[in-house]
Image 1 (cartoon, helix red, strand yellow):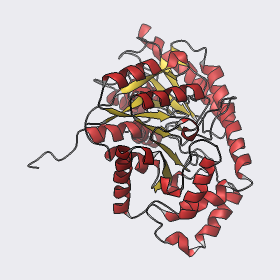
Image 2 (cartoon, rainbow, N blue to C red; image 1 turned 180 degrees about the horizontal axis):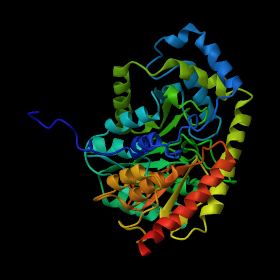
Image 3 (cartoon, helix red, strand yellow; image 1 turned 90 degrees about the vertical axis):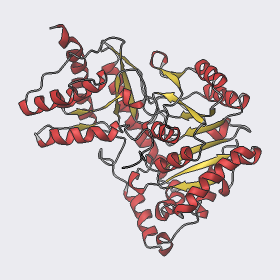
Image 4 (cartoon, rainbow, N blue to C red; image 1 turned 60 degrees about the vertical axis):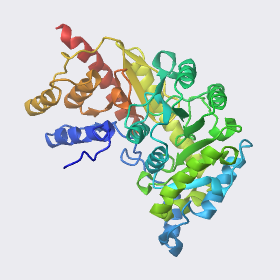
Length: 435
């Protein structure tokens, strides 16, 4: 074309889904794949309980489910969610402070695209790919980050955060993912309050991705943004895709705090809403389901049962991997992800795993030739040799090599077997270049 029309950042790869293409090719060759790459509980065998399906079926029979909702979302649902927030006794909101989107990915994209191109959001490193891509695409430049430290249980480096906020006037907001994706870290209330203090002192807004806020275990608890925000402007991002789970509903929302206390922040929220008005509204039916399902007497027991299973798998994985040489492993206490980091200088471009099938071996060798991140090379060899499909940690915008796996397998025995194979292959891969 006569003009380069694509924004910078269009060449970024969403590795969580990109690796599925590789896995599919290997499945065609007969490889039995363990899909540990994506956080879709339904794909991993979780089924919506009958009572939940019955409630959704009732809504299907309601003609209002097929109409446009108000631009911000179904009024009754927004009233219900505002009451849920206000009952915690922290910051108070009303239905006008809640805006629905077609999934949290849509909320993230619109929230970042409404920010001036020369204004930046500082985010954790590693960080969830959707936030990373939205920040890069809005600004056409790599993001500023603060470290999540695997040698300190994945706790955030708040000294680095404050130092960067002080040094870079372009930073207008701080992203916190709690519980964290990809690490499974659960923020303490103390650390969250320190982040709020930093935001207040340097006149910043807060963006809290809290889609996993009801998913903590191993005795860990955490605060929500509404509990700690005080009078600082901020946004909480939430959704139903992980809790119900109903990821295909594409139903997420933002809760806006303190827009009345800062005119600049209010203009920003108005810019997000203007984008939403152009789309008219988000999907109606899943919004209508929220008060029916979240207030149902079976909902809390259902969540408790899920968390018990995630806790079991978290401890299976940790107990197997914690003593494996060459890697750093932390127990996952929230969400359903575990990230494993290779020690410094452990990986190189000469390591490999034995792959039995010649056509699979040729394919893996072909896609790992040339310049490739060392953890991506490991992930591809692991997939070819064992069928275990994980995501390279460097795809979450970090220079720490490693991989992310999920805790979504419904069969605990199958999961334990998979993790034991993974542990053996880590050692085999690292030591292969010594032979």
